[in-house]
Length: 625
Image (tube, rainbow, N blue to C red; front, side, top):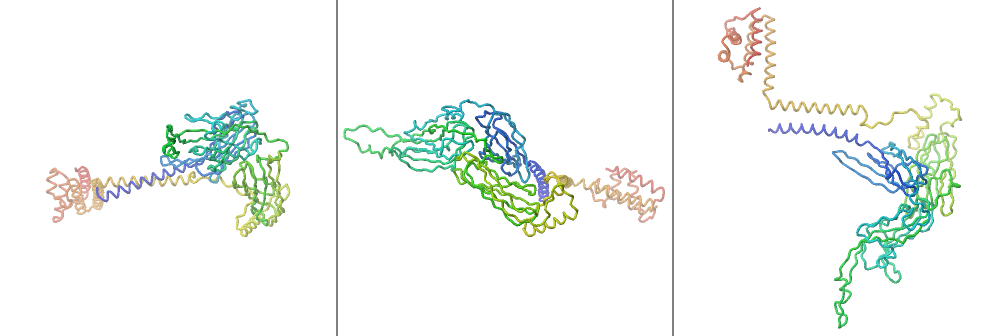
């Protein structure tokens, strides 16, 4: 194969790869369509137990799901996980959000649809249904076994489960909650301490875990603090965790925490008695040097204690209460305080304190129809041990110049220390609004065409001053929903046209390659074209009754056709060659001889004879082989 053939094959493969790439990209675009699915670990569970809700978002990055408010159900955020795959040239990613679901009473519930904002658009999941059954255990008092708080999981095979009283020679645990009674959803600070006797090598294999599902445990730090303490004259290595504990359901439940550890214990050597006293090798140094290590799997368990969880009171519950429990303060600022009708004002609301910030939502803005509001964004700063600050940023837009102040915002929470609900209310913030026309009371009159133009002009002027595009206070002209590029008809038609052109180019390249490998095909085509040209010239000579031109053109046609069939140079063929290959009575031999004699004799056919010769020559040339 020549270098030219190699280059040609390279171009062919490039065309094929490009076509496949376009098809693959189209398939990838279609596969990247975002979707949201929600599923429950179990759609039937007792009221004194819980289940897990998993919300999975595929296709693009997304914000945290907006869970619906379901009377009788509570959702506690547990974390998230991500997954990425590349299968057959298609990339896919998904993000899963995990929530603990607890019910207040038995019944049938519907969760959803759950809304998630993905790539600027809102995607909804299908609603899911669940059935909450009566309690699995009727005990509501202090439990000493597998009660409402859930039984401890059995230890793994080969693992020794030791409570603190049974492990005093190895170690023990202490769990120290700040109080022994709390409200459902309240964060109770606690401390967990694991004591290990010095001289024992310890590997901690897990974080502290609460047995049962009556509590949710949150650690401030995954790595424990390490220290040394002396208890009853015995030195211990102490690992300390700090965090918060929250009860899920009202009742009295056992509280028990365990951790998985591996202990390396050095065995002491047996020393034979000696009549000469302690020998040199009885020194403890050689116990450390020659002693053997034993590996032992230990599950260290804290002493079981009871914790009482109470329901939040219904008396005095504010209408805007959304589950916040703790002690909070609120600060509200607005900027700018001088604005124009239709221009946004940024309202910042900062909630600080100690409590369950997972359930802290934005304070309620009490503005009326003269305000246009947008959903707030939030930012949380965790300071550990239940303390933190949550800042909400909200855009509000005045729609009339009659507004003189930003109305107060309210935030309600339950104070467990005082045992009552508290509502924080900010002060009204003075606001100066210029431009536009004060809103007229109903009924609203139809504005003249000039008024909207003037309003737009004023809004545009305000945008120039503030540097922001104006926010229109009227709905305006609606546009169709945003359609992704890969769904638009013109884009699909363009991709189809490009693919058709690539396939046509590929077919043309294959055809050229075939002709290059078979040159006789081109030769036959040229011969047919040349014969057609000669026949056309002969016909023209017949119509003009030009015998000399007819004979000359016939002689050239006979040479070209015979040269093609006999694979010889056409102009080297003579009448002797024709007599050798053709019958003696062949019209081709006769006409060729007449053409040779006409050069010096001047005798040429005329009229009817020309037409007869024309038809016979055509027939014999086309049948020549």
